[in-house]
Image (cartoon, rainbow, N blue to C red; front, side, top):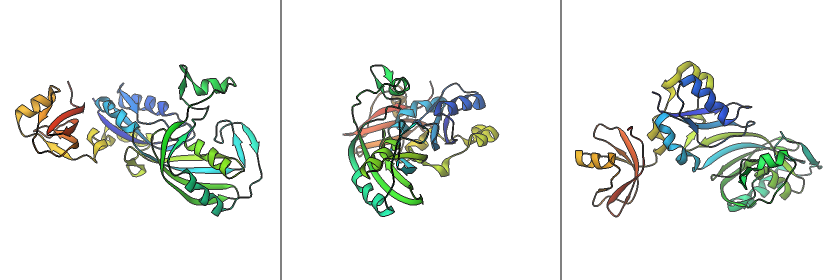
Length: 288
């Protein structure tokens, strides 16, 4: 039975769910989920969780992400990317220096209004379902943080390449749209490649063809998702039994924080939090 994490380099034109469906067929495993949706036009890092590892999906979704995005100025579309219908075109009299200067305005914590063409739900309906019917509704802004925003290159008179590291919930196409508004000529996202998600990068990624050829050998262990948390190896039967029963254990003097907990045979058991000398499970990953 397959268990673990696959880092897929998602191909263009596939939905994230398309990738999961394909992997269910390759690995013959029903329990497969992904850690953070990528639009069909986007490529890059898509963490996919297989078998018992699906219990870790929530931790991947909440992490920081990094993207390389194409910004095309002078064009406004209804989807905020080049796959949509063009609503406006404007002449572009913006220099590379102008774009670089505008980026600093978008750094840090901020409120971002999600696009109509998104899976955000309002009143039980996904926004893109309403948008396809020609409807537009008021959307509450979402709190996001843009940690890094860098101009990598100018690839044409109105085309620029950006690198963005950001929090969960950030829409890069909305960032491109807003940058265009700030520059006075409109803008849309022309390409998107995710280069990091949940701590994994393109160096960790495999193609679907790789998985077809190599199968389960490409699975990373579930605990690789928590590589930033220190390891705690249990040394007593009593401690391990309590952890396996979901009970807290007392460890006087242990520093507060989050730990990867392993059994005496070095099996990864759970992610736990230590507070005031007591270790409590956050999520268990051992089998029944």
